[in-house]
Image (cartoon, rainbow, N blue to C red; front, side, top):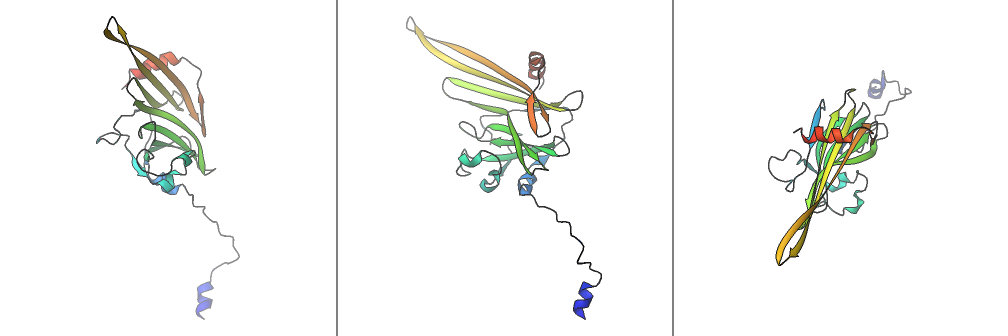
Length: 212
């Protein structure tokens, strides 16, 4: 009698829709959702753990950051082998951009965007927006901007400056000179991949370097 009541009204022959649980759910939950309506500036610092640094992020455990491609080279989550979840934004209805602080030359100063594709359930692309590093005679800084163009499409612009100091002695007097190299890129974020935009990058360079 009890079994009859339990199965009353249950159509056991009806197919049941199974919702797939993504292995990326835990990773995605670490990121703060943001809206990109205009322009956001992404920058790095030599002391990313300092209080008030806006791209500090939440530490991602070593089992979870393995979902990012290319992370097999990091044997543990200690010291410089750490990943931090910062913000996430919608690229379109299917793809999500994950702004992430990652290991660089000497510390975790590189800020990248990983692109998660919902339909494919995997990371399909990545690109670096900012970093900073250097040693005794050399230093570089890379800054990035994510913005929407007039068509409301997402684009990003990066600018990197390398400075090398050369020491010499002239007539027993120490002299130094420096070599400065500037590099920049202007790209768009479309679907699950990014690509170069062919337009006036020098005009864009002036525009962004003068925008805080």
